[in-house]
Amino acid sequence: MDTDVHKDLHSEQGAHKGEHPGRSRNPVIKVVDLAWLEFEKPDLTRAEAFARAFGFQTALRTPSEVHLRGTDADAPCVLLRQGPATRFAGLALQAADEVDVLRLAEHTGVAAHALPEAIGGLAVDLADPGGTPVRVVAGMHTLPQLPVQPPLVHNTGRTVTRTNATQRPPRVPARVQRLGHVVLQSTTYRRTLNWYLDLFGMIVSDFLYFPGQRDRGPTMSFIRCDRGTTPADHHTLALALGPANRYVHSAYQVSDLDALAAGGEYLRERGYFRSWGIGRHIQGSQLFDYWRDPDGFLVEHFADGDMFDNTLEPGWAPFTATGLSQWGPPVSRDFLGTDVKSVRHEAARLLTALRGDNEFDIRRLAGLLKVASS
Image (tube, rainbow, N blue to C red; front, side, top):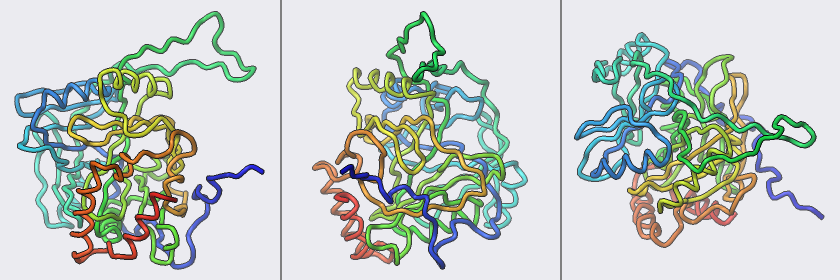
């Protein structure tokens, strides 16, 4: 008898009465995308070398700053700055226009300011309840479109679209097209979630809850932008409850599975560390491949992700390790943070969180520990 290990893990089932609606009734503005991420790095040369191998192009390089971009016509999607230690320095959300930036500034009491001329536009600088810097921007210069990595033409079953021609995808860096999403962990998950929904009009695509703890509410949400009837990425931001306020990973779109796989071989041959992959996720459905940069930050190549408009209501599913993928290798200890090198740091974070005034208590710890073995 066949056993479907993914039964009830897909989140087509919806909310129960009284559960979080997954959207705000009256948001201040509605952001349209994730603009860029900011990092500080002690060694910009090493960071740029990995970025180029991963598939970014360099849009700007100075002794103290590197701007990385994809092939899409847009602003840079990663800003690297010289710093004494490596750290995630925040995210930028893109507003529909500069009027929305000014509206947000008035609502929050934080003055708007011009961005550097190299980027252009207007910004207001905020911080979410967990302390993560969040910059809301609009009116930036648009970089020109770069040549894309064309997807391969496939013969499928008896449908023949390629005749007298071979498939030889080159083993080169996968060309990053754009920034897709960022995943954050928060000790104040519910308050932080509502902050993003109320200020920026974002919508939850899927909620996850710790096994056996649905009565206590969700502990992870995949959140998309509300673009009305125009489809948006299944998640631009994912937010999870955990013992620290921190960056988890970020994801960058490439053209197809062959670009993702051949690009992964290029990274592997140069000694970079694959954390987990290749596989296909459940929430979001995207093909994935996760890598560690030289400073230990987790970054993802993805392709073929779900796109939702604003009519779709949130799905609900248990948060389990086996529920992270439809197919692919078992989720790695490195990805889960349960490998030997991570345990000591995680233990210290857990003790600090349990002593603090936040949502991460003993029962939530028990639920989180159950995720890794379920």
